[in-house]
Length: 560
Image 1 (cartoon, rainbow, N blue to C red):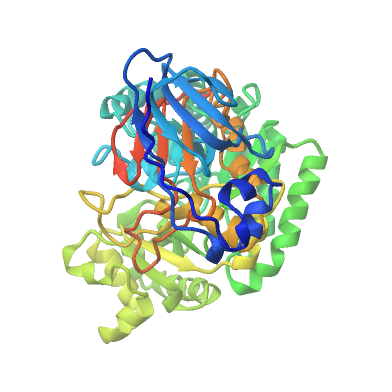
Image 2: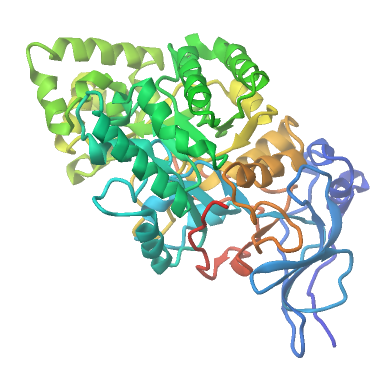
């Protein structure tokens, strides 16, 4: 049987070192080779083989990383019926489709442990910005919000059926959002749940976990989840213990009261006897950057006391949230209409403004606030602009401009806040307790999801870690980075057949070039896909091939 690979000779970088050389050497070899010495980005030629084949897909000649943190080994990976059927050197059997991965890394599909990528799947199931960065599974239901918990009578199974009908490009697992549960039972009011309400909420959590939810999440800076006291959080997290699933929390505070918020998170895990996952750990505001060591020390002490505590982090100095997050939680009691009324009330307006201006000062001023999204067409010119500069150009006070945006857009305004330290972020990404998350949404450079000015993390998180932290800054080995975005994240939420390249595991894999993988999206131009990831396979089906999006084979996954 003949085969035409059409592989051109690979030029050696300066000094005679090839991609194969540094891929096969120790885990830091990739970082040791300067980017300027690499050859041009490599494609991964495809061959469709005629005649009898034993496998559906064979990826040949790459350096295979199993996802567990060990060094890569040159070999082949074969997939049949959506699962990995063989991993080894020079497999003799052929595949219906073959990928020449010589000189490239072959890794498990990345599992994004904290994603909002499901929000656009019904509009565009291609999940372009997600899958093109090598993410094959997203874990959603983050920050206290799950799409099956807030609607009366809707279950995880209902949501699963509806999303599977959409046929997304990536796999989707979901936590149960305790904020959504509270909203469905208690509503938007700042009050304690009654005994009956608490029982009903606990039953909702138990049911969701029994049907396949992979944890429980909170967003304690968002309403109505922010109104939940410690004892409620413990009660609703207790069902996690028997399943070994995590309580994943966007904590009550990430700036001046950061350490107290970590203490509360640990108290929830201790009281519920469950695992703890601190979501997108950060230290907001320059005056809080020095709290990194104390933050990690609290988690270390919790682990020493027997609590299964970890965290995730994204590789950016800016966060994304709603513009209302600059305003005090108490002002949002009762929902949007009540909040807007309080902005004008003689008894509350001055206090709201004072506390909001304090928050803005903490993050460095109005020009550290960038408008990401509005709904009102007349305000579209604000998208992608720094709020201070935008307000000045309009001759407005920035606070009044912010309030005006909220009023004209029914409070639904997205923002980015530039408030974190890059040095802290790099340390968190490299830390032994850390995992990589995007906290990003899904969008595309074309079609209905190209709108606003979203955070570029939705398109570039994984390649940013691989290109910037691994290759350029030498802060993390390639093998460790892959582990932090595959096996470690999959295991954390009990996706038992994901995150590793081993026989019997799901056929999710990525072919990437460690020498060229890079993020291209920016805060000013987020609609760009990364480079250096020529092939992404989901459930044994090639989804991305050399810049082309080919299929939507994803499905909902249940925690095992």
